[in-house]
Length: 130
Length: 252
Ligand code: SF4
Ligand code: FES
Image (cartoon, rainbow over all chains, first blue to last red; front, side, top):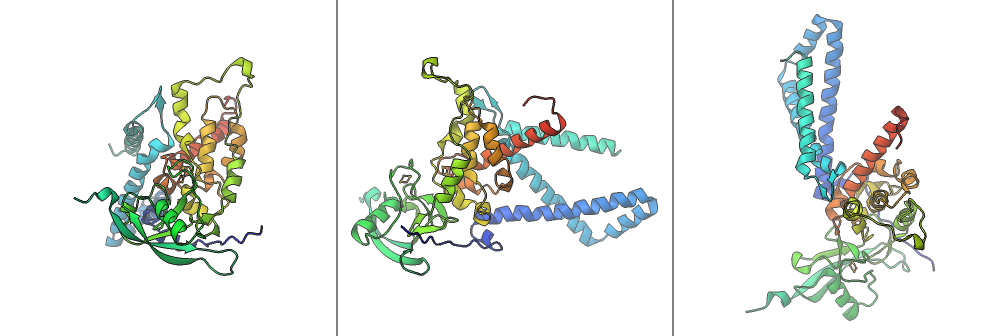
């Protein structure tokens, strides 16, 4: 018997308009562009800092405008959104089974938040903020 | 008072029809069928086939959400036709074959690719210790059963493949259900086949094609949560890699 299967192509550029869940996914992916740009800015800042005080102050001055303040707030908001949504699905990737029961999600996600808080404090202490 | 459970209505169906014997593209055809509120979409299709057009082709068997053969797109969502209740669809119901698979005829999707992938991941017990019948059965505690039970619930309905945009864009991706089933056996205390399965699933065509869209878990009618299975395989494969490259003295 011969078969003539019909193939429906998926558009590589517009597929995510097909369902709201794809749009949600793409939105989260797009937020990481902001985080990427912020990382580049931070690396530039570090390199200026290594060149001495004057270049670093020029770098800070260059950031001192409404656009970069708005951008930095957006990047912070998106970074938080990314981190929270990531930690909240951690229990799926790393379920902990004790005997016949799975630990509640909040334990696994909570562990991530606590680790996040500890690391942040350690870095802030190391950077001389406290 | 009218019993709403058996209330009748006229239901409009838009069904994608494709006849491979006639050149041309699949076409949406409109039908109106008398239906009862407690019917599912599969009942409406059966009515149509029995009373209106006997050439309408679709797969089904159990009518009770266990055989996994009645998967189709219902208003754009991958669904089991025997689980999709008409009362949840007030307007016209658009029915198409499962997305991302070629169409064999009408609502029948070509499952060959999925079946070949399933075979590749060896979804069966590869015994850790060979036992003969006289040695007695393989024993397992409830806690050991719990480790994989959720992933054993898969009915191979392929709804997760129809939901997965990665599979749609990169058909080489082994995909949610096959990897979840590999994971199911990897987590079974009686099994010793993990290394063989890792060859297939811990690869670029395997879990590393997955970008965790999570659509598979949203549509799975059996709450297998394939997205969770794939992330767990990623974590375990990453641990393997570190052990192998930085801590080769540790036995896996
Ligand atoms: S994982 Fe769920 S959606 Fe995918 S084939 Fe199995 S039962 Fe169907
Ligand atoms: S007919 Fe068996 S799952 Fe729907």
